[in-house]
Image 1 (cartoon, rainbow, N blue to C red):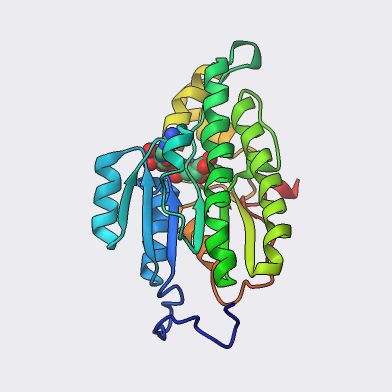
Image 2: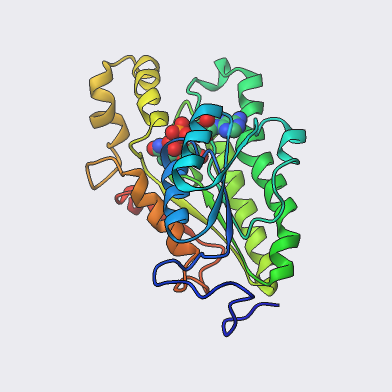
Length: 263
Ligand code: NAD
């Protein structure tokens, strides 16, 4: 078992490279927040498993950061079970959005969102925990959302999935604690990524307002700080949770929401 006095066989890390010798599996790492996390974790010394459906983008990110691309569809349980099982850090980040009133919400889209955003994180953590327990150290970071803590109309599948991820994260925190494994959620408001850019058009249609009004009137309506967050700001919070100052932080949900949940 590794303890705070030992490096567990890892080479002594230069300052800031506190993940040297660690392997970090990041899902949805080809774009947006996942890509920013993959880059930040590689800069901190980790070897990153870049997991994504988008082959070209995943391979490009892996080449850029010296990681390994794993092209899988996280909606396919068998494919998920082929991912590496020796990650010391898991960042459950891949996600997708669909906006529609409940009565019109396509059932298969609801199921897909639960598969990618709930079942895949469960399968990946289930698969990697034995390795983490064996080393007496592990970090699970779940990229939840302000929608893991609050609801918005027309986002039934996404809000359901993020609330489920919150529950799973807390259970992993309780089970992992005796083994040196922490599990936490990060809860961003709107982040400047392709996922949000795609939502602007969809929200405009759902609310029947012009696209340019969506960011100001809807997206930032409940946010006290009137700007989108950058993916790199989320990545720095994820890195903090895996760093030397966060060993006692577990089972937590950290809002990066510009004051949204202060209301
Ligand atoms: P993004 O669309 O930029 O990136 C998501 C990545 O996930 C893409 O590379 C995509 O290919 C991958 N992915 C999607 N479905 C997949 C599947 N079935 N198998 C494998 N890979 C798949 O999105 P983002 O904005 O960076 O979001 C990342 C996470 O952050 C999501 O879980 C999202 O819910 C969460 N989040 C985003 C925001 C935001 O405002 N962008 C806010 C809060 C939370």
